[in-house]
Image (cartoon, rainbow, N blue to C red; front, side, top):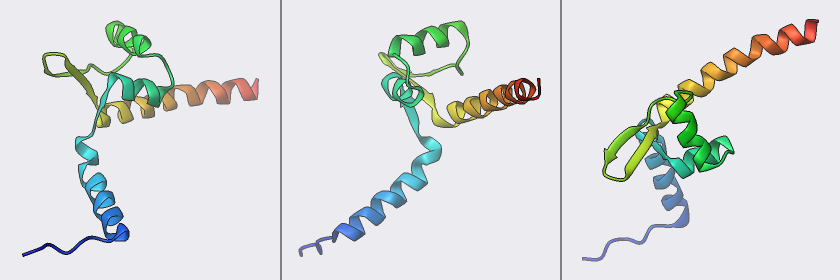
Length: 92
């Protein structure tokens, strides 16, 4: 028995559903994180070594990644740190 062929709209809906349900398990490899933060990959490794980034998770030999939830929390904390400085500079 042949399976019914999916339309483009159905395929998009399935892809969107998959992305939404798997967002909490998303990870960033070094090149993904570098692209997200618009820095070079070597900068990511230097920041990780200095403790400026959340610690990466080792998934196996040669497979190191950062959990998206950790990176999002780190970005939110950095945004909060930067905000009071901007307000202080504007009022001076």
